[in-house]
Amino acid sequence: MTVHDPILAAAQKARAAIPDDTVMLRAAADLTREFSTANPRIYWTDLLLSSLVGWGAMVGAIWVDNVAVAILCGVVAMLALYRAASFIHELTHIRKGALPGFRLWWNIIVGVPLMIPSFMYEGVHTQHHQRTRYGTAEDPEYLPLALMKPWSLPLFIIVASLAPIGLILRFGILTPLSLIVPPLRAKVVAEFSALSINPAYRRRAPEGEFARHWMWQEVGASLFALALIGSIFAFGWKPLLVYMAIHSAMTVINQLRTLVAHLWENEGEPMTVTAQYLDSVNVPPPGYLPALWAPVGLRYHALHHLLPSVPYHALGKAHARLIATLDAQSPYHRGNYRGMMPLVGKIARSTMAAR
Image 1 (cartoon, rainbow, N blue to C red):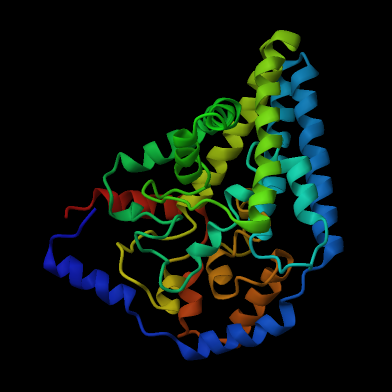
Image 2 (spheres, rainbow, N blue to C red):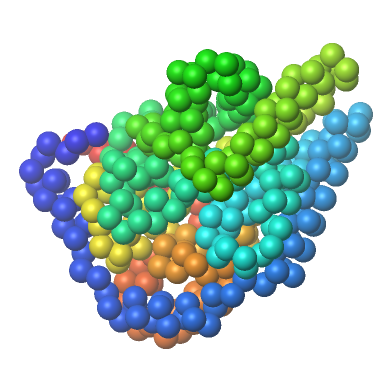
């Protein structure tokens, strides 16, 4: 969407060019030194427990005949696997060597079975954090959703609900075919190999060590997708449909979380760091629900844009320190919101505004 009204265009440029608040940025930088070390015990315990509960509850949802109990198992499976899957975000920021083996085992127990191997996000999400790319047409994770048409928000969610079907097609059909059709392979790599929301984003082919990681992850996801298709003949439709329902619900929750991770009010202008922060969202305590729909530190998304290298388990402490340190006039306080629904309402109202 392009803003044609000169007044709106001027307002947009003013938002993007909000001067950086040096006090806030300096305080955030000082905190990085204290809170930048990832704790392996927390990471491994959280991942393994979330995965065990998630896959165990999914098995229960498949085997249990009582509908109410099966639905309860499905909800537990969705929330636990959503938490486990959210570690893909941490993988993109973990310093090399900080958590030996974590990327490998995350892919084995979560990424490949959910057909979201880490190569789909690594090398993509970091572009969202680049100072001159955030909020522009080159940002794979940004669209001016608040400035689009009202129907764009329901479509945004509906597309997410179809993710399991799309992933089975991507890895079960397109991957094998692309190995024998080079032009298709180029298209699959460029257009169907990134967890992004910008439809114009095109990915470059991997190189070096990353290409080797990409290859085994894609092979694993492809074999799993083919096994899912084949499971119909061995076990009937129920296991596949339960898996897809849980996967779809998980993806919808994540899409709703994405919808409120930013205010989505930028339309292509490069933004200052402070402007990027103010376009992003924290949903801190005392609310408890954000810990479910924005797990693994995602409830501190605005703070994460200030401190992308801080591990998820330290973001709450960093937030509390900044709240206590910075005065009431600091922009930091304006990046904090109460919950999901007020933010969804804000964006929905914005799409309905006359332009």
